[in-house]
Image 1 (cartoon, rainbow, N blue to C red):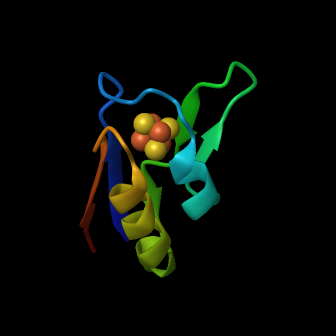
Image 2 (cartoon, rainbow, N blue to C red):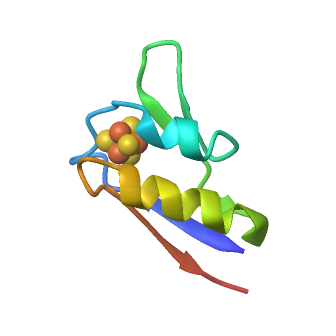
Length: 65
Ligand code: SF4
């Protein structure tokens, strides 16, 4: 399982992460980022892409059992 954290002080809601990991990140109707705090290991590659693409370096994750 992945534990995902977004630093909402840094996040500028650009939404790049949404394109890379749409099962984890989404923009709500107010164009604010929402995300799943946990995700299946199968999402790791997508979440890593989101980490790499985020212009604010706001996303981090850890692997947990
Ligand atoms: S890519 Fe980064 S700054 Fe953009 S919405 Fe996602 S977490 Fe926020």
